[in-house]
Image (cartoon, rainbow, N blue to C red):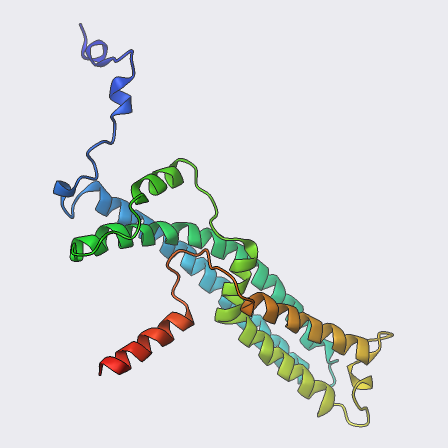
Length: 240
C-alpha cells in the first residue's frame, strides 16, 4: 500500500481537524497567531498608504487650483471646480477607508483579546466570542462600516479643513479680487445668478458638516478619534 493510499481519509475526519491547536496558549510568540497578526498588520499598512496617497493628490491639486485661481484674470469658479475635485477624492478615499477598516478591525480584535491579555491577564478579555467572530470574518469577509460613516471619518480628519480653505479662498476671490462688482453679482457663473451659486456652496458645506458631526454610534472598532485623545490628555494632566 502506498503512502498516498494510507493517508487517504474517505470520511474527511482529518480535514475537519486541520488547524486545531494552531492558536493554543503554549504555542508562544512564534506561533501561527503571531504570523497571522503580522500579515494583518501588513495589509492594514498597505491600505493606510493608499489612503495617504489619495490625500496627497487632493492637497496637490487643491494647491495648484488655488494658485491658478489667483493668477491673472482667471474666473472665480475655478475654486469651485477645485471643491468638486476635492469631493471626488473624498468619495474615493471613503471607499478605501471601508477596505482599510476591514483589516484594521481584525488587528484591533487580536490586540484587544490576545496581546492585551498576554501583557496583563488580571483583566477579562473584552470580547469572549472573539475567536468565533474572527473565524466568521475569515470565512466570509464583510465591510463593517457604512459609506456615510467612512465619509464622516475622512471629513473630520482631512477634507473638512481643506474644504474650509477653499471656501475662504472663494470668498476672498469674489470680494477682494473683483473690483467694481459687489456680492452677490460677483459670484455669478454665466447665466446663473450669484445668489443661487452662493446658496449652492453654502448648502454643500452644511451637508458636509451634518455628515461629519451628527450624533451617531461609531461602528469602526477601536478607531482612535480626537475626543479620545482629549480625554486621555485630560486624564494624564490630572494624574500629574
